[in-house]
Image: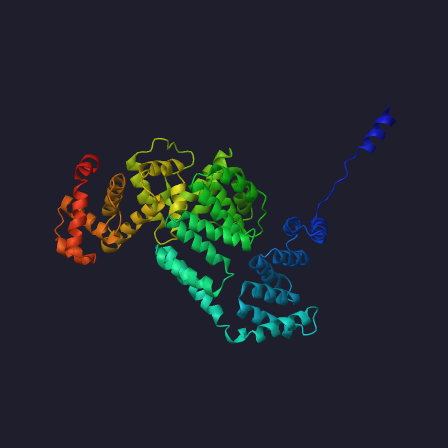
Length: 479
């Protein structure tokens, strides 16, 4: 009997199955030979996670990214190999030149093609590299490589316009950028955001559709589209896109952050926690926004203690977020709370990208719904909210008075509930200044205020009258 037991035990010994880096590398190569590029990328990424010094896996992964059209991601890996691991892998220079050529960044393409020719004149890809150099020279691109600097300047200028909320100018500059660099997908994504902020959602979605048609799998475009659908309350589209994004395995920290934060924003916390926590475990040093989303994702997936720990980090880095904890009972939303939230969001996002405003507003889905209820008879809700911020900017620039800006948000909520036409930011700011001065017995003439805000006295008088029409409401609700 004992022998039988021993035999049974020996037959059922557990043989450890070690899935090491080489195992996933081989699986990745097999998937690549079968042209299953998505699976190949996932397997090779896993190989690199298990052995970050596996330069063969990194190089193979970069080539797969190239085939997937992810040229920038490919180059990031190639640069890492050259600078951090093995500067003798000169073929990386040729691969980078090829990627930059695909991106239309010919200055960089020419630079790295020359680098490869110098470092390894008889290398494996020397003939292909010579063809690339000849093609660039035949096209005369070597004479216009200064255009690379032009792209950088144009991109930064457009970005600054988005930061400052100068959306019409941003759209103009991004269109110019696309005209010169038609395959620069980042410009299309930013153009979509600019139109979205203006309330032109369908136009914004057309630009994202174009990016995804030409650059399938562009993560930033997919995440932006998901936010648009969520804002429009298109639940079925949100569900489908979340399912698609949930199958993506992002390699870069930036992409994991983008994906995790977006999924948290649209309240799909399970997958959001997966990616944000993966960054946390790797020692990612995020800002307060990172810990905000991580805390929300943790709380709504039942990890209360960890959520509390993350929230302490949020408050440590940004005390303004106190009161917006994920566990806070915010079902009873008053107009006073909405005004306070608008002001807090304005202070927090001032000087940042315009879309940070919408991100912050969406932190509180109940606040968002309450604002939409107030503006239910209006079109382009977020365009009106952007108008409110721009008026606040003028008040801050001319006065810097906290109570004055808070007063404006109160007036904005009241006026938004009526049929008053909300346009001419300078005029509204000046009129609020006049009304505020009167309430607080500050002696400044209307002529002086008109000059301060660079509008005519007639225009100022017209807008002061608009506010006077709200006087009863103001006295009752803001006494």
